[in-house]
Image (cartoon, rainbow, N blue to C red; front, side):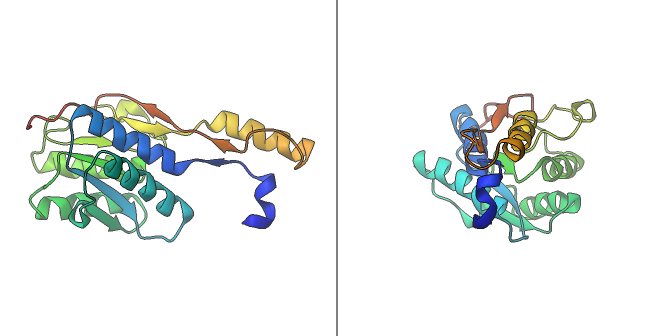
Length: 184
């Protein structure tokens, strides 16, 4: 909301999915799916923009068949995975709108005999799920929540004229769910 923007802090969501997609490209993936939500929120637009930008910079065409837009919530990831499986799993990697989508998709793929990350690399977003429940541990994008909260609190105390940073940059957390693809 423009009228309160000077009082807010936010994450550069586009940079997050750009980093996630770029990481997969650097590993050698060329067919990368994107799992998005159906809700009309700024995060949705910004996160898709980062995915699209990374593909285009690498000379990879954005293929609509690789994009799954599903209902918000954990079941969305399962639905997206099922849709990709029904298409014959035309991809070697996937960037998910959030960790919940990634976790649900990972479970469905495993149930259908898809080896993660050997056959399909997965990157989530938010780094909010305990890694002790994942095998393999999920590569994801982390928001610098503590720094964001500190600056938000300081902005409320110092006022809108403060020179504090309002835009925060996400971090790529490399774990075990993204590897070099098996096929060329």
